[in-house]
Length: 415
Image 1 (tube, rainbow, N blue to C red):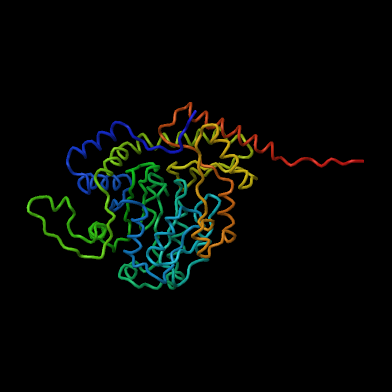
Image 2 (tube, rainbow, N blue to C red):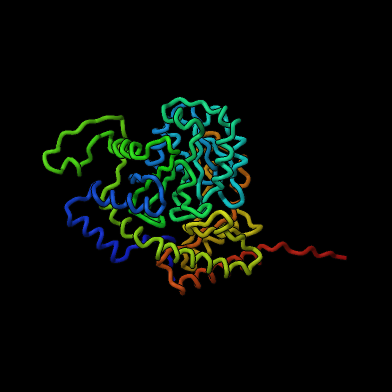
């Protein structure tokens, strides 16, 4: 048996969509990007959506749009992929890391403690596809005491009048919060369409705008489309339509537009996502839970509660009372049985760059605790029943063996 961790979903509809793009003679940003943006709006009910070439570039653009600069602070969880912090650093600002709750999402109480008069934004991370406690975060940033701390220094900051809430929704397209698309729960939601994500464009991302009503979503969309193309007021597709070659540069923009050849992959996937692909992920997650809940060592991931439902992007198995070294050995033994597993995530303070920058994992005890016992299992539409049965058997046999071999021996009293 050889089971991959997260291969992309490529069926005939994806191939047909890509071939159509190739045959059209138009492969950079054009009509398929527009179609994908419309599909994201339909799925999420957002006011507008802007496709870009990665989650990271989209986050950098939105922080720049809000005026984030040197001297500013942006609060993030320590338990996330490095891009959550790097986008802030690329704007010259300081990532302020805080600890997480037991459900792996950012802890609102820790956010509250970390806010200063330098805080301009919060990036909340939907780990494994589970939305954060957005109502808890919004209660904090909308409170009069926190609003009084806010020091606006750009036009957009003056207009908003409070800390900006960004959802790092790299994992959570299709997730639910308070009965609605979770994308509606923050000011800005950014999805990743990287190769391993629930919907992929090979590389790519999408920004969903749900700013308060005093922001004009059409104007913001138009500005961001220009800004994402070097500040150029016409894209290549528009310039190709007749005698329309003349263009202008309006802003010091970025070059982060998504090409049509990538959008074509995502288009074919997103059109069957809610009806077919997401339900398969949910079915596999529930099967894992049902099989593993019989074992005392299994800490089940939070998949759904009264206010949230995951997008089932990752299935994070956590094992009670094991060390990081034991977890690593379990992973090695599972891989040796032909099942590729992963870990989400190594907390950022444990990574060399951030350690050298002064972050210390001892300040984030729950992030380390959850990381040290976590193993991410394969979960994607291409898994068969035989595959998932094998994965379950492999996990159970390896964990049981590891726990037996490391069980403390009873003391023998010699008389």
